[in-house]
Each structure stands twice: as structure tokens, then as C-alpha cells.
Length: 245
Image (cartoon, rainbow, N blue to C red):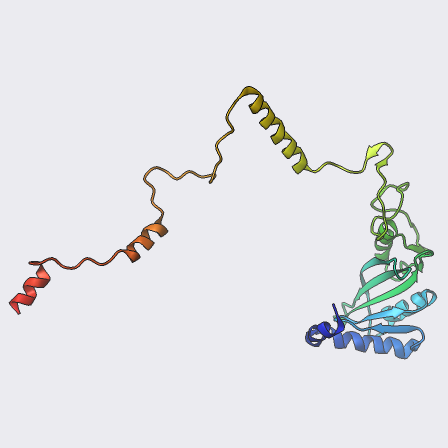
């Protein structure tokens, strides 16, 4: 989304200013050379040097005014055109009700990031997932191995240039679409009918056949509206009343 189109959305965001204030506190502690603000609907703090990540994250957790005691998730994003990969951290504080996003950027050819497991134990599984699917190597992780795919799987499926192997130990990794199977069955039935000289089955216009004598209420109502009102006949009560008057 272009910056000009984002502005109205940013203006309505209830989290933009709190996130900017959180970043300002981080910047005041570490300086502009260590962190940068990536302004968006929800502003993000970028830690410029991965070696400072643990120090910054420890401050976010232990600072009394921030107190980010909960790590919601760790995700990875791949930017092949930029030659980089990002590890993204979504934080929340149960004490203050605030949320903030922090990320660190590393070279795609060497995606090494310090593990935050020592600060938030839930990072164990989050980082394993990002390692498995994006290929980020979390240094000093207690058990860094794949969490979804087998250990000998080739590649990381969420990388933009990932190419799936045709098979895994002789087991095909692709399956035919069920729709293709139904279409093939239909063709086989048609060929069999033609070989027997049978007529094609009738085309159904509706799966439900109304009972005999049934009239659509909507059609009946519309017909009543278009039908002209009948005039009273001569000698009727209305005419007699008029004559008596």
C-alpha cells in the first residue's frame, strides 16, 4: 500500500502513537544508531545489529514502564530481492496492556540470529518453526531442529525461491486434483454411453422438483398486483344504495 493511501488508516490507528512512544523509549536507551523506526499502521522497531538483539529485548522485558512479559509469536519473512531475511517478534505486556513489534534483519546467505529463548521460553517452538520453514538459524537455541518437516527434508518451504522436490524417499510430493479425477470419470461414462448407443441423461435445471399443482407464492402475488380491479355490476348493492339515495 502506498504511503499516501496508508495515511488515513494510520490516522485511525489506536496503536500507532503508543507504539511510537515505546520506540522512543527504546531509542532513548540505545540511540538512533542501534534501532530504527519503521513507521506503519503499527510502527515496528528494527534492531540494526543482530548482536544487540538480546540486550534490546531484555530491556523490553525488564523495563518497568514496558514490561513485555509475553512473546506472542516469532515469524520469519524472506526478501530475496534485497538479499535479506527478517526475524519478527510480536510482544505483549499483561501488566500494561501494550503491544509492540520488533524485528532484526540478517543476510539471506547467512541468516544467523541470537535466540530469545532465554528471555521467553515459548520462543523454543516459535524459533524452531521459523528455522524449519524459512531457514533462520537461532544461535544458542537449546534444541534447534525441524518441527513440522522431517530432518532430512530439502529446503525451507516459505522461502520465495523454494522448489519442492518431486519425491521424498520414493513418495511423491504432489497429488492429482480431485476435480481432475471427477472430470476423467465423466469422460469415461460418456464414452461408455456412446459405445452402447445410449442417449445422454437429461439435464437437470433444478435439484428439487415441486409437487404437482404447486404455485409459487411470489408469482401469485405479482399476478394479483397486475390484474385490474373488477368494477361493480349493475344492480349490485353499491348501485342499489346509490339509487335509494
